[in-house]
Image 1 (spheres, rainbow, N blue to C red):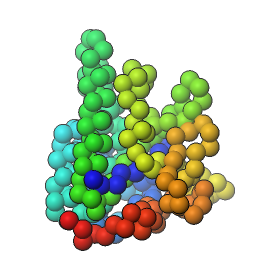
Image 2: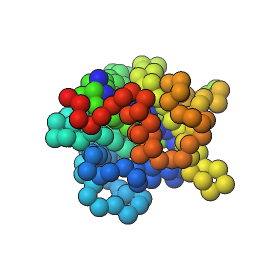
Image 3: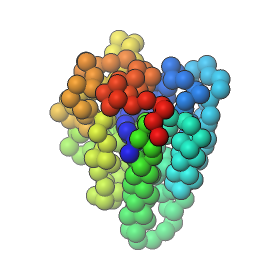
Image 4: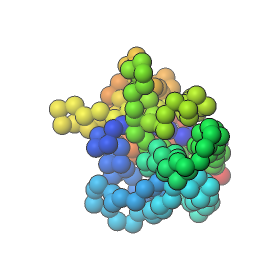
Length: 210
């Protein structure tokens, strides 16, 4: 079972930029929508697909080929794009199916080999109660599945005095969480390489594990 981490934040708050210090030789970046990386980058293995089955296949192939870090960027577009393609369908079955596809992706990511770390990056939205959560396609999907419940660690971006950061502790009105002792601070730099190192140390993971 791999370690999956959810990274939430509004557009422009440093989610994708947090990849900048990861070693591209270790990473497969799967993007649900095509866009350039927001930092100087060479040697990155990038795959673009918003098809849930192809995304799973791409992640499995990357892990089989020795990539120890899988990043899924703009995960919400996996749901949103399918919804838009099916917007003319009548009835509510499509919401159940879209929810199942999101669930299938996360479950497949969790089923990758034990040394693999998966980082799923997604936008946020506020619900009717002012709680900040992962952005989906609305209440019909949210009634089917609570996506954050499938993760042990949920980080959220913030920008404070020009500093791009991750929050590691729930503020009472969001879905942030992390295992006790994983991080030394409630707020850390938005650096997924540092997060990955902390996770590897916490769970005693090495890239050589089978």
